[in-house]
Length: 59
Image (cartoon, rainbow, N blue to C red; front, top):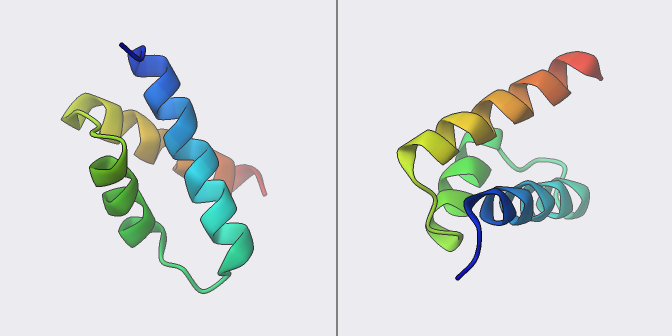
């Protein structure tokens, strides 16, 4: 069984890779797709959204 934190880490990496490969990719669509791919819970989806918003404001 994969730990919840590992699923979130994989989702962040996948989104990062997708953004690198496709600069026009929409963040919301990537988050939705990551949720499906990694079977994230609503709580994990909220965490993912917060992480991405925090990283975007730091750039």
